Image (cartoon, rainbow, N blue to C red; front, side, top):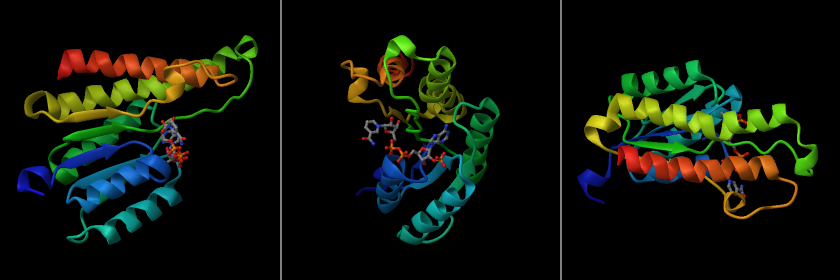
Length: 180
Ligand SMILES: NC(=O)c1ccc[n+]([C@@H]2O[C@H](COP(=O)([O-])OP(=O)(O)OC[C@H]3O[C@@H](n4cnc5c(N)ncnc54)[C@H](OP(=O)(O)O)[C@@H]3O)[C@@H](O)[C@H]2O)c1
């Protein structure tokens, strides 16, 4: 690992468990600093403690910001806290996602469909706008959006999720065209 490859900063939404936590763990092990988010404060605190303990060079490498990914105030606070704590935000990992309904799309509640889009797609756009403005526009970096095979091919009974992940794939291409 070269110096240029280490000590960068990542904001990972939904990093208190699962894939997001795994991404945080891998980045911390490579010498990067991370901020993880999630709704549940206890789980987030436990994740920050575990990630900090695993950091090769000690404390101060990991912070957590609790909140709902689609909440614009939370997005603003999370990016502000990262910039205050670390002074840069090289990587954004839009990982927080939800799949709350299982059933035929003909019966899909439109309120639920909107909520899935808010959490899975609009939140990713909001975080991308904020990290781009705060750091990446001038300094570069990377935005990783966690999609799903359900966004590529239809999957029975998870229509809202699949639609949102297809939109996430399109958003990723659009961000690459406009920001890369
Ligand atoms: N697991 C799979 O097989 C799979 C396959 C394809 C794609 N994916 C995608 O990969 C991503 C992560 O999946 P996962 O299986 O690792 O999920 P997971 O184990 O359920 O973990 C989700 C993480 O996101 C947080 N989270 C959930 N809803 C949130 C919200 N509205 N706002 C902020 N944080 C939220 C959770 O913490 P709180 O609950 O405390 O908020 C947790 O930290 C998702 O985008 C998912 O669609 C997963």
